[in-house]
Image: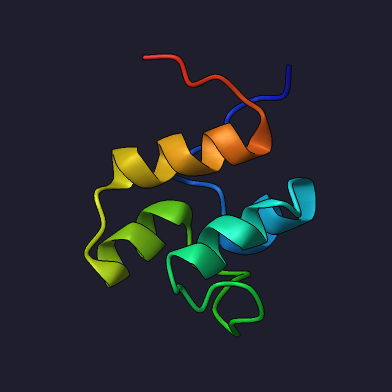
Length: 71
């Protein structure tokens, strides 16, 4: 089973590793796919910028990536 996306992973790296994450970002109406900041912003940065709970975002992208999050 693949590793779960971590909060320090950049959006660009996450999308390259798990392209299906684009659907999560689009469903949440986040501009992440195609954003000029994707190579620099981490998943934690995205959660903070959009006022999202980072744990919930990580759980959602983890499920979409087919990973299991460990506490």
